[in-house]
Amino acid sequence: MSVLFRATEQFMANLRNDLMRPHRFAHERVGFVTVKAAAGADSLVLLAQDYFPVADSEYVNDRTFGAMIGQEALRKALDLALLNPVGVFHVHMHLLSQQRLWFSAIDLSEQRNFVPDFFKVRPTMPHGALVLSPQSAAGLVWRNASDVQPISEFNTVGAQLKIIAAALDGSTDYSG
Image (cartoon, rainbow, N blue to C red):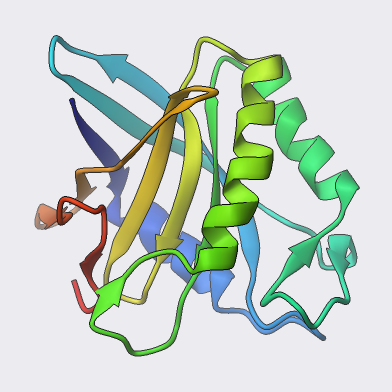
C-alpha cells in the first residue's frame, strides 16, 4: 500500500520555521502534526491539518537526546487524538547535511515506545512520525498499533506542486 502525505507549501514553511527556532537547552524542536486520512483500494492519503509545537517548558534537560519531551507534552498530544477525529504525527527536524534523510536509531526506538499509545485513544486513525530537513521530508505511519510502514511520497501544494518520493526503506534525498 502506498502512503502519501499532503500539505500546503505555507503549512510546511511554517512547520520548518518553528522547528528551526533555538531552544534554551534542547538541540532540536519537537511538535505534533494532526492529519485527516482517506483510504483507497491500494493507497492511504494523509492530509496535514494543524501543527502543535511542544512548549519550551515541556522539554526535559537530558543531554542523551537531541530533544526530550516530558509527560505533559505527550499527554497533550494524546488529547489531540482523543478529542478530535485525527491522526497524530510526532515531528522534528534533522539539520545535519547527510545524503539520505531518515530517523536516527534512537528516534526509531522511541517511536516504537510511544506511537502505539495513540491507538489507545484513537484506534480508527493512522498515527506516526515525521522527520524534516530544510528541503525534504521522510516518515513512518502506523495503520494500527503493530502495522508500521514508510510514507511513500510527500506532496507539497503551492504555486508549484512538489513531490518527494521515498526510497523503499522510506528515506529521502536530504536536499529534496
